[in-house]
Amino acid sequence: MSAAYPLLGGAFGVGQALPLGYDSYNVPNGYRSLYYDTPDHSYRYGDGAIYRVDPGSQLVSAVVVLLSGQRFGVGQMLPQGFDTYNVPSAYRDEYYDSSDAWYRYDDGYIYKVDPYSQRIVGMVPLSYGNAYSVGYEVPAYASYGGYGAYAGYPSHQVPYAYDNLYYDAPGYDYHLAGGGIYQVDPATRLVSALVALVTGTNLSVGQPLTTGYDTYNVPSQYRARYVDRSDAWYRYDDGQVYEVDPRTRIVQAAIPLTYDGYLIGQPIPAGYPAYPVPEQYQGLYYASPDYDYRYYEGGIYQVDRDSQIVTALAALVTGNNLSVGGMLPVGYDAYNLPYEYRDRYQDGGDNLYRYNDGRIYQVDAQTRLIRSIIDAAV
View 1 (spheres, one colour):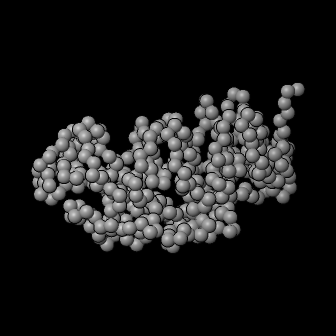
View 2 (cartoon, helix red, strand yellow):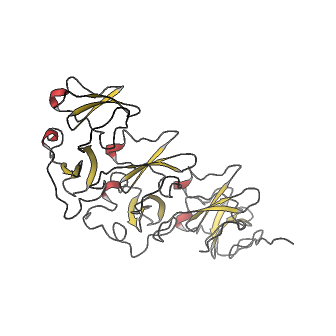
View 3 (tube, one colour):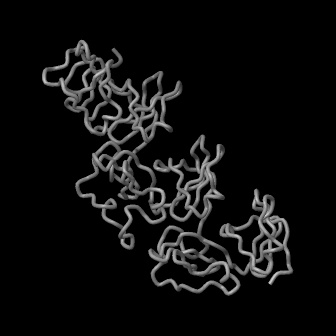
């Protein structure tokens, strides 16, 4: 004998009749969207396991999920009872069974399984920092906005930079806890997905994209430039946009959204001077009911007037001339020519025009490489 496989996940035995008293549907709420009674199968919960039952004979045919609280390990055999695909719906587009790999869910983790050997070859946590866990109820100590609203964000559950992505709707609430943004069913209070991380730690080129970045989350000011494609994804985290290979989920590039000053998505630092925009830019970047603009250390930043959150790096005023053949630096997404030159130099399908310290630069709209320098500028 080389191995033994139990056919008992908890209270019932596979092949045995369902015990008396289990004629009513009793699957825990977090699993009801996956395991519900049909004319072909019934599902019952007992002593740490969900069982599949034949409605006619009332015989237990399979243990489909163990709710033991015990974590499986990479390299061990998949426990008996996980024949049925059971990944939470929020993750099914990414983790689906194929001839090369199966995916099974248990107690906050998705497990990757070799279909031939039935061994676990990988595991993906669906919680971050031991905060909320997918499939479980929001902890009793969690208040509105996770562990309580951030200081300075009295009306937001999630950090301001993510508020336009993750907002309460009839079917879902969103909570911040332990560096993660979680989707929560407002009726059952069950956590249905980890949708993003707000960790304070930048990702690195060459590392896999962290769990929680399945949803496109680039700040709105940068979406025209960084949009998901078949060969590249873009994800935002703590002041940087990351380019990711969709097939391998490896981070290919990191693009900072700050220039030696304020950080996108964060409040203006306490004690930082709020200098006015340089005079030649005041026709472009001026206060409005929604936004102010501030200059600091070579960058012009867009700031939300109410929250004082930095929402975009609008332009650079560096004192350094750019060069033909060089890449247009981050921060020149906005058309910024002085008004007396706008009739002559306008953005088109092939070219962009940008102003920096007395010169107008012609830029290739696709590659963002500088094609030429026009000296006759103010």
